[in-house]
Length: 94
Image 1 (cartoon, rainbow, N blue to C red):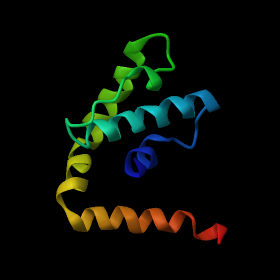
Image 2 (image 1 turned 135 degrees about the vertical axis):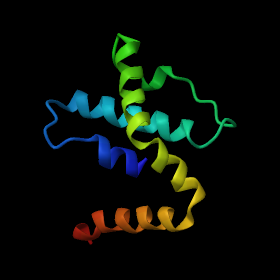
Image 3 (image 1 turned 180 degrees about the horizontal axis):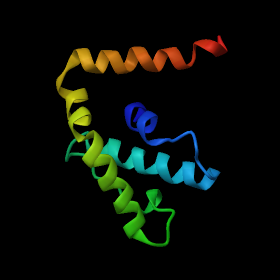
């Protein structure tokens, strides 16, 4: 979830609803890449009336980051790097 969101959220977002769309898309894909034993309903992730926009965002992220999404489950070192980077984001609040 962290890796996808980090890559997908642009600093030039135009609205809070755009951020919500991107985060929910990343959340859905994170569940999807955890394996086929997890079946999560699509409806909670859809904000757009047009489902094609949702699927377009999904395909864009899959095209760009599928390799890393698979690598995070198969390479402990890569997973560790992501966790280490994630921990640096909260250090300013301590």
